[in-house]
Image (cartoon, rainbow, N blue to C red; front, side, top):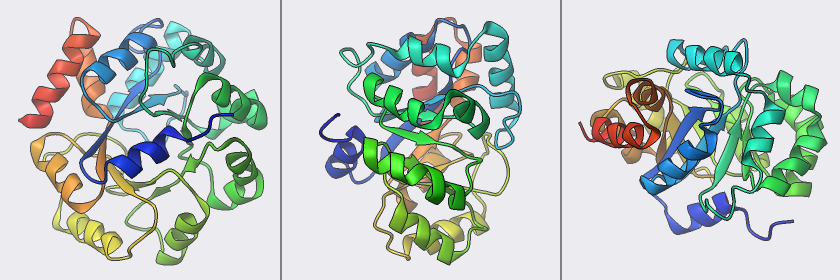
Length: 260
């Protein structure tokens, strides 16, 4: 068992301006997972979310859907991904979050997955289609046993009572989805989205909050940093990977886009 969760360490050390970057494992190539992780670490990000490709990624927009389809065509699976990550820890000190849909994780085996995550050095899981009630009944006990939180998502439509329950029963951080739509880049946040960010901020939740869905450049990144503890970038980095000739070039392009 690991002594201290790396996400807990990070959030204790850095309160604002956290940058977490998502990529789809197996995209653009089956063997690119480790290279992408190491390039992101070298590029100065704070946390990495590794996406498990799935045939029906209902929370994701076109960019991530297409990367997921390509990754599956390349032969990526949850089991193969975990094998790819074996031995990554001597090279990577950043928190690593495994993000994927419920079906592949259930097929793999819930406790088996937690056990393997401990062995590899995965610090948290994000399962967008896991209902909170199912988390309480079947997953919370493993989170506590293995010190691997399941990070829950909230949206502008999530009732305050449910947000309080998530805050009281989940660890890691709270993933604030910026809108009720799917993932993707947007030029700026609307007045309604900014009001939602402020409303959640005023709730004084005990868990830190990161805002995802729609981070496309300096304006949206700054807005997320101002209204929460950090931002999650996904589709933008996938776009960078699709345009670059190497993973290092993709990370450089991402930094340029976030400063533009």
